[in-house]
Image (cartoon, rainbow, N blue to C red; front, side, top):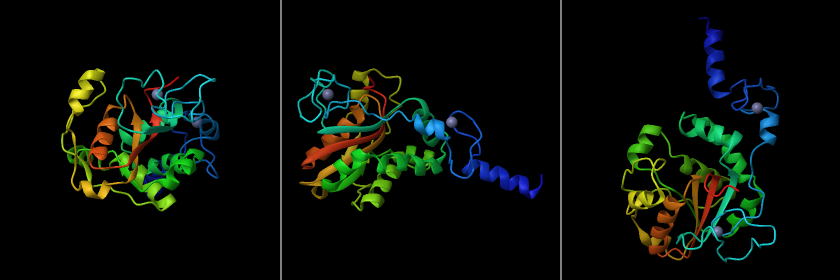
Length: 247
Ligand SMILES: [Zn+2]
Ligand SMILES: [Zn+2]
């Protein structure tokens, strides 16, 4: 194999020449990782949604009240508001899969751009005191090589010049994957999985809790519970993609 072949193989890994979603050849001059068509098809959450849990609500409801909708009523969610950038579907699902499970860490750059440049962030982030990623157990972080929520939080920290706390809320239970569990099993599985080392530093703070994908909300709710027990004034959940409350 000639040296130029190695260089091309390496470039393909970090700067793929075909779209990661539809496989069409990319235009090298302005398309990065996904083609323009796929970029236009990012399933952003645009419809009216419940401010509390993020589920889609009817056109005659208001998205500005803190009243709970029929979906989150009785759910005892511990976060105050939930904002999702996109639905966990189509192009977004492909990118997150490659980022998280195929460990293509470089995709953090494009995913992070979707988050920080979204208009919703300008409404949420200015009043936030501290950005906190949903933690991974150290063993899982070591296996993957990174915590995807921490990378997204880092992007928000840099873009908005907000402090980030990534070691204070920690995961002490290496829980099994939640995907095949029922909602009640997930609740048991996640119980006491998190711990706050220094509660005082969260006291009175308005916290932006960041996660990559929301499935049932159980994990984020348990994190929020610990943050509130530490004296947090409010917890606002931000997720890149919502898999649970799709319309
Ligand atoms: Zn494409
Ligand atoms: Zn709701």
